[in-house]
Amino acid sequence: MVAVPQNARCYVEISRSRIAANYRAVRDAVSPGGVIGVVKANAYGHGAVEVARVLASEGIGWLGVSSVEEGVTLRTARLTQRILVMAGVMKWEFEAVREFGLTPVVHSLDELQEFNERGPLQVHLKLDTGMDRLGTLAPAREIADALAKAPQVTVEGLLSHFASATDFSSEQTPEQIRMFHRKAAELKQLGVAPPLMHFASTNAVAYPRRDSWLSMVRPGHAIYGYVSPARGPAPAPVFQVKPALQWRARIVTVKEVPAGARVGYGGSYVTEAPARLAVLAAGYADGVPHRLSNKGRVIAGGRFAPMVGTVSMDLTTIDITQSPQLKPGDEVTLLGSEGSVSLDAQQVAKGAGTISYSVLCGISARVKRFYTD
Ligand SMILES: *Cc1c(COP(=O)(O)O)cnc(C)c1O
Image (tube, protein in one colour):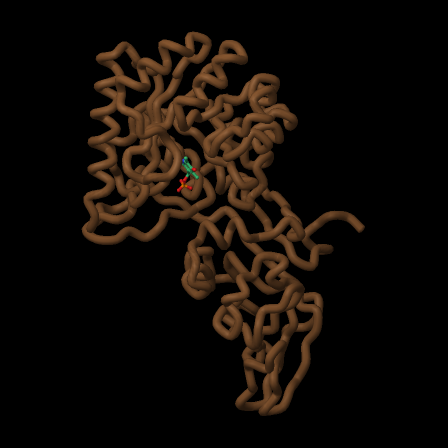
């Protein structure tokens, strides 16, 4: 059987030109600054190698991943861009960093020493400016001293990460920016002046926090077509992007049930009137959030159809009483659009009490990925 969407029970279709257009929208907004295209977590479910190739063909210079393993995957696919490993390197991965030409983000001064013992290396140093997650809290003087003791290590870049860039009712973001600039200035006085500095991801670009754009920005979500909603008195977004991924599943079976039918595990949904149900070839093992049980909806036959009963591992039941033409083998849309009706990851996330990032990353490996131009 040929691997085409026509033969898949449950699949996503990703538009390369949409990824490219989203990337260009961000790039043009921050120009002349550069862009690190964040393709961690299999490019938020979109396929890291395929997305990286699109970005490479657009001329991107840097890719961002979480782990050494993700970086190795890109190198093995012959991506030649600089690759920034953002979420830490384990001791047993130090050799692979060199072997595959990856650029690690260093989060502690101890790590500088450990890299130093293994020969020359360019790294980016992360400052914790108030998120209290990764990044060093050390004063500038200690950082400069540690670097003096690590002559093999060159700090090529200085970075930080925002905790609440969409929230314009909070002072946290301006405080983080002030702290970054203060620390960078102190380091400069001590002779530490990395050529690259980067801070902003999607939200700090979209709702322009221009004094954080620096030499490069690190968008992920925007490349896939999303900007999170803002809180408080936010300025309008400075670029427009559209979702690049559509997610579809086939109908396995259709059945008529009488009023009073108890649908699915636990009998949590009881039909009030006779209904026509369709069972879909997608469940929580594919990434349909279980929290959408009795709450979510899909697009079926060009209109919204509600999920009824609990989402099971491999199957989800919907009510298609309004679309009697649908039959087994037909496809419905979990994310994307049919005609003028559309459903995106932010809407789905809202119903499931989660965030769009989690919905996209949750689309499991079992769901086949197809690419269109
Ligand atoms: C994931 C990540 C990004 C990208 O964030 P988006 O909100 O998807 O743009 C940028 N920087 C770091 C350090 C990250 O972990």
